[in-house]
Length: 485
Image (cartoon, rainbow, N blue to C red; front, top):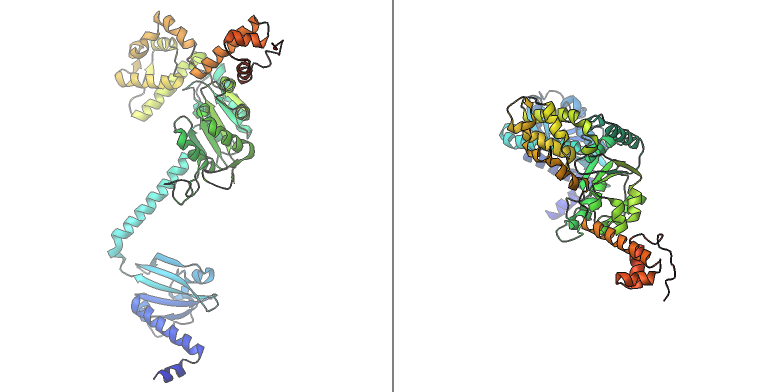
């Protein structure tokens, strides 16, 4: 028997023919329908189950026909031409829906010679819960992608920077000029003056408007996480990092704009990496061995005095000069009190839209009280005060008595509070540096410029004095005058 079988299968063509017949019988028994097409999309074999599903009368030959003549909208020709499988799809077969799989067929040399299509399931109604869940997941994914894309677009325009005062008009004009130039912008100003709003407006008016607008607050992220947040993480960079690369904010903003808020709070250890991105357009993810090139426009913002921080050693001078290409200083609300009426009108409209309550106005007496306040929190604080007043009052017009939260800062009591507000609290490091600078100047003057005598007056060594002179930027003020013993 074995010899007979070997004789029958001695020819390779016979082996392939027998194998093909066995496979076709298997497809016929396993699937609700099966069809094979050649490279040109012509049917070479179709089982009886498939014929029954499509209602073929059996009087005419089906083999040799184009697949679309027999099964309209079939994608088997595409699979045969591309060689790419379509493992799972829902296909409309007449009035019913079926689950199908399409697989390219190859010869012994690996060349695509056709495609196989099988019906995995022809009673889709029983799969409705699963299909519904699949459609819901696909819809949720599309929604999440849209929301993510929206979150990386500019939220504000120049029209939303409200103000008619000369100070407000000058800021908007400077910002419009900055939008026309693809350079680094540094926004300076107290908290609540609208730095983030202006950053969005600059991006929206720039040539990068259609690209991502990514935001990161250097003060809101712990120092240990900020590097990964900005520059990304390579696979396996540290325990728990995972085997998939995680892009940083710079990579997400590639082609667009990165708004780096509170840049003055960035640790010195990361300032060098930020400088490299600004200078070379290159970044190195945490744990990576290769640098990546990015094209990102940086808009930085800070409420701190970067120049003083440079002098005290808290901020790199080279990074400051790289950021300070197009500086824009935003005025405080104290510097543009004439904008209070239009700001109140705009903010009250916004509050009404957010809460669904009736639009309220502010009386002249209330505006007088608001104008007498120092507004350390600027427009952000004004929005908060108006929101509190709207919540507490049932009247359509908010009078002066609707603002008890600022009563202590108006009238005669305002004089007592105005002095501290005019001299804002500085970081201790800046204050100490300024005090050291002043005492060294006094000592040098008292010693007639002789540094060794000045050092004795200060109770430090001459080497320490030289070090402080260099650190505090006083070298040019104190030429070496008879400093030898």
